[in-house]
Length: 314
Image 1 (cartoon, one colour):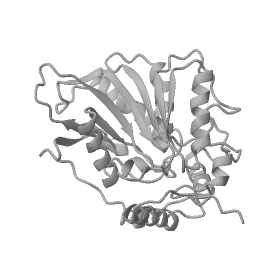
Image 2 (cartoon, helix red, strand yellow; image 1 turned 120 degrees about the vertical axis):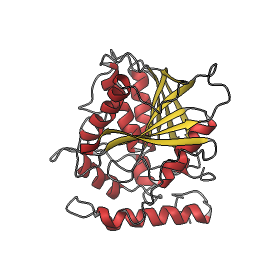
Image 3 (spheres, one colour; image 1 turned 180 degrees about the vertical axis):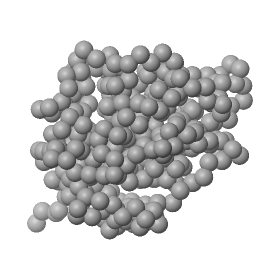
């Protein structure tokens, strides 16, 4: 008798509990008419305050970009011993959540960015962009690019002198990885002088299409990600009446942009073996390679979607 394929690795009970709680919160707060009960979701979406006092060697400051649309970013500054001789790269980071949920100050992302800032080390700019369905495509892409322009044209008082904008990476996980790709496409066509983007870090990026891939079918029932949930989120994010082959979702699909002549920077794509979206992520990597771009694929065979936020989940 054949065994049913596993859809999840053996996870510590605390991580399983978080996955279950977050999935439940997403499911009870998203409605069939493609709206979200924000008040209810915020009961479980715990937020972290910025701290000028170092926490694990990292200080945090919130910088307003455009209060009228609640566009801001959290700046993570690791403590270094000799700022006169040391230069640190800058990572502009975009959080996940299907373009619909979470924020730059959601506790899991705040903890994650503190860890990145300390361990790399790097100066992290974590962007709080507008959410769908209240703000559909291309609002999130516009917010991301406006943050880059803000950094380009403004002198930020709390910006550390050792932050090297000539070594700037655009990074994101899940929906943030999708956002990173499209933002870089816009940025490399623009006249940015102060901000020099040298790489993209796409962590389990959220791409899709009308086709049902083998991994989506085989791993249906995996933590967080299901075809029903991702379909709902695409409906919440994409322009009304669009399908999943919209170029925002299926970047190398039938409606995708030819980027072979675009000076797209080197890209690392991180994939999890228990992530139903892995086939789309691998297609993204392959699309970059076919377009003549420098691209690398890093696989974590035992990782679920969003594993990076939980030590011990991969």
